[in-house]
Image 1 (cartoon, rainbow, N blue to C red):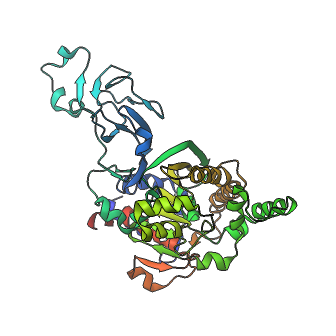
Image 2 (cartoon, one colour):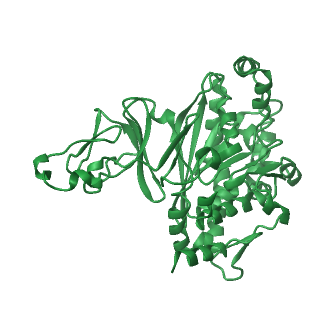
Image 3 (tube, helix red, strand yellow):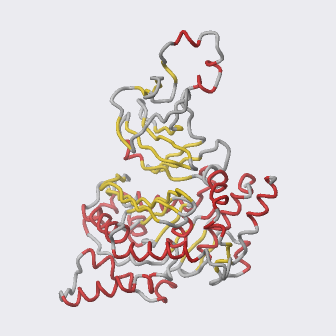
Length: 440
């Protein structure tokens, strides 16, 4: 099939108010997503606190390809294809770690490279004299990722060298990262507490949609909230609630609450739910912390930081932020019906320990594979994945609060329960899958 025909087929999978089930079920669609979407979009790689000293590294797959992110001897963050240019062996097998020396050595044939990727040595060097090795791709050293950007400690990469500029791609939604970082009086966040990983037998887009779906908590998490309410009553918990109850009971809000909390969509698939308030807006305020923020950022900015607690911010297609508590979720597609979700927590440097405690408690309570909240969600994601195989209806409804005017306004407010927050993802998906993004 010609590329133009393939792109036209992709356009037919997304309508103004619904999408075809092939987006979630078709292996060929998933394979093309790796080439067109994840190789050309800016995706989240990690945080610079994970590689705070020279020689530290972590590995990951992006667009179905292995990469390594490391800090070199000069302190610069770099990202390379995790592949020896000689015979293709992965140079790094571990998930993360720290190099003992000042160079990288391939475990297969001992080709060696500086931390900046430059080729420095190989055994039997004389055997390459008079050959084309030096001017071939094998002689060029480790191949860097197409583009790399560190924004306030958050490391993003683009696999392909050509594509949208970082600032143009994210635009105004970067203010959500600013909000997270500025919660630190020193302007610094640090990953702590390890990572929670959850492998879910569903397409990655189902999880992404659910992040900004504020209608489901009323029904999906009803039993978890009722259990918490029962325990709170039996224990006669009044006044200041224990942290776990403070975090789970707000899931029991009704539809009007979630609708009124507001939302906003941005170009390129990014979005915020909870622009007015959220289930995180009621956390207690600490006077000493408020004073520290005011001293660091001024009274106006400190007030904005403390009052803005969005439900979720999505930096499409791979990252979801929660500014309070300070947690992020990273979406790693593995197969058309398998997704790994990573939950990471931040220490707010210069802030009270309570902020990290909130992040860790929330992650265990809501994101852990063993939590009462995640169990509900995962069960339904996998039910969706199975149910879509039914031939009763090939189309997935996204009609709620649809208006034709939204097609001309990629940057606009909406209610907290509008499915515009979901339609916005799929319109960005269409642009990437049809190469329209290259003209932006």
